[in-house]
Length: 206
Image 1 (cartoon, rainbow, N blue to C red):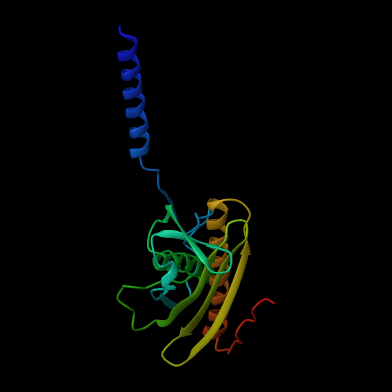
Image 2 (cartoon, rainbow, N blue to C red; image 1 turned 120 degrees about the vertical axis):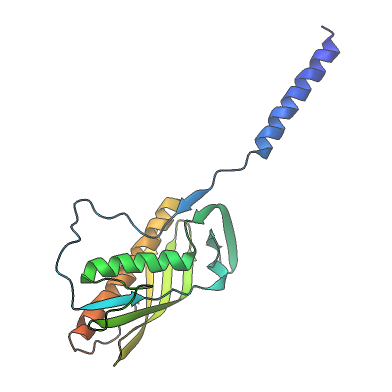
């Protein structure tokens, strides 16, 4: 075979391989804020005398997208195209809060379900002001929230910081812990409200 022709064929074949590699999109990783249920947990315990309705959670527009948004430095945001939430961020947060609250309080979340007129209902509203993600840094969740029934309402704010070290898996776990901490704060306040007490808003960590 002519040496020049052989070189041309090798070059064409190599180019085809490179084009195929460039055309192959990077795989997308999906993450959720709802942690797995602990093994061996029984959901058939005693139920509280009230129900909750966890309303849709609002999040800042800067992070309200499928991709995880990373904060770099003071003002730079980086969109991680191949690292995405399994659902919208607001739905992920609502799901995480609902799961934790129902398990901690022994209640049913009746969101989008017909209510029981004989059962007291507490509405849980959360408005997220900050949802910061920093690799090898912190997962930050700052939110205002309210707990209300037909007679009263408690309105407070919480700021939660979870240190993370590692990549995206560690970052998502940090946000899961932050959501759990917020849910536990809501649960503690709701227990006291349901018992007829008037709890003070929790103090943010210094």
